[in-house]
Image 1 (spheres, one colour):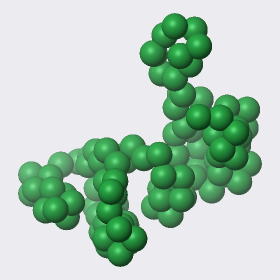
Image 2 (cartoon, rainbow, N blue to C red):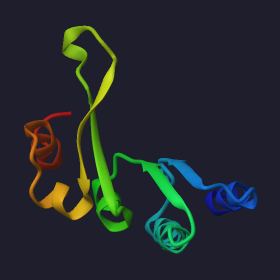
Image 3 (tube, helix red, strand yellow):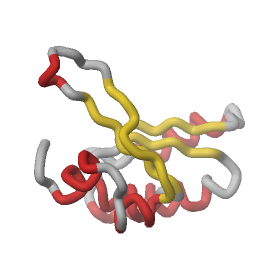
Image 4 (tube, rainbow, N blue to C red):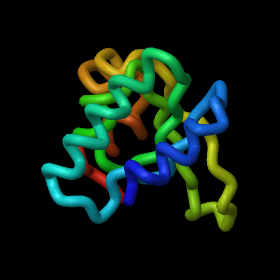
Length: 107
C-alpha cells in the first residue's frame, strides 16, 4: 500500500516528495523495502520525511532537522532547534534539546 501511494505521488513527476511517517505500522521487511525505495528515489527527487523513528532518519536522511514544540508555555507553536547533516546532528548535536531527544531524556 505504501509503495502504491509513492507510485501515485511520483506519477506527477514532482520536484519534492513529502512523506509523513512513510513506514508507520509496517513490519521490518516492508520498512526496509520502503527505505530502499527512498534511497533510489532521492537520486531524482528531493524527499522530505517526517518521522519519530530516529533509526530510520539515520539510515535514510542526508540532512536532519529537529523541531520542538514547547507546550509548557501554553503554546503549540513549533520551532526549528537544529538542522545539520544527519551524521553530525546525531553524533555531535549542538543544542541541548537535540541532545536530550536523541538520548531519550524527555518526550
